[in-house]
Length: 182
Image 1 (tube, helix red, strand yellow):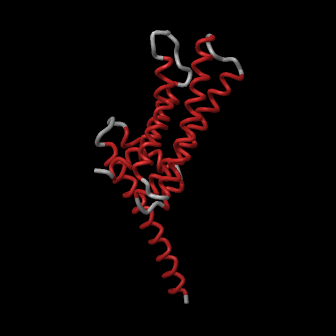
Image 2 (cartoon, one colour):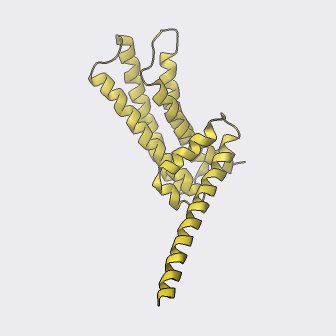
Image 3 (cartoon, one colour):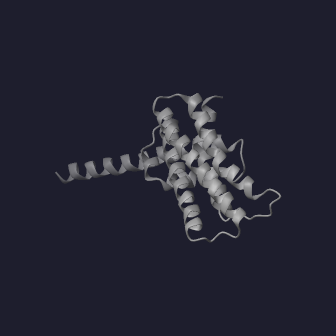
């Protein structure tokens, strides 16, 4: 009887370790593929971003990872949008122009949110072309927001770092989808 209990415990532990190994190798495989065309830091960033989400442990294929990455992007975008709303509500902007630029960023984040929520739908129905367009549209939000600040107007974005991270987080599912088309 004790032997049977030990055997069951061993099988459960072994199965758990194997699942973790599969999940890690899956994340590493797709992050490696995605980082081949990007910045050097992207590989480690991709792995850290996905492993931070407990759902990645259940991922069995690139579709699952794309879904998880898109949900991460949606969460990150929502957080950046809240930061900008807080800056505007507390009037912590430097000038009227900064206020106007931040309000424009909010509009861009709303468009990015819509793009990411529709991207989730396209992941589920396996429409990879529309998924690509929606993820590309979402990547525009942090980029265009920053471009407004980085022009000749000498304004400094209070969310520059957050926008850089947001762009990279959105780029994870975008690159996963891109690699499926090669």
